[in-house]
Image 1 (tube, rainbow, N blue to C red):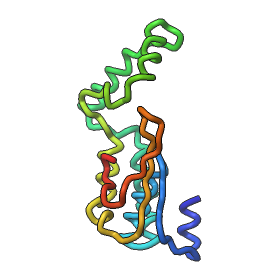
Image 2 (image 1 turned 90 degrees about the vertical axis):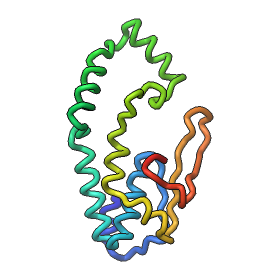
Image 3 (image 1 turned 180 degrees about the vertical axis):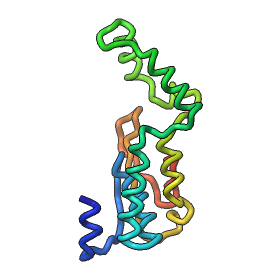
Image 4 (image 1 turned 45 degrees about the vertical axis):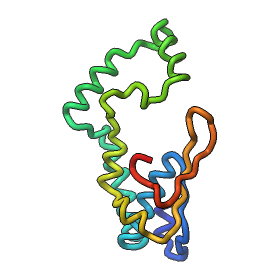
Length: 148
């Protein structure tokens, strides 16, 4: 849909907003528009999502650790699975990621120049839900980064 809107050429993008995966689209779109207009934005979005679909594309060491960890995940319905499911209601992924494996952050950093994006005057509104409270948080344009 976004690709078709950019291809159409009749629209001028005055501001961009996004939440969750839409936030990823928003920053890649904004960076592409900043670099070269709608054509560059379409290209960047296609390249980003193609790269994101390459099986996680983790470095070999991280892939080995991740594969090893997932091999220990118990089957659905087992007591261990039920126990882990209960704990997942109280812990975020950040609490149980001691190696700080975050392939999406690395991928976004590869595709988006956040310093230039923050300096761009076009407004960008990125929203996220604060897991602990369920409340919405909107990130200020000058605070947008791959980590937020």
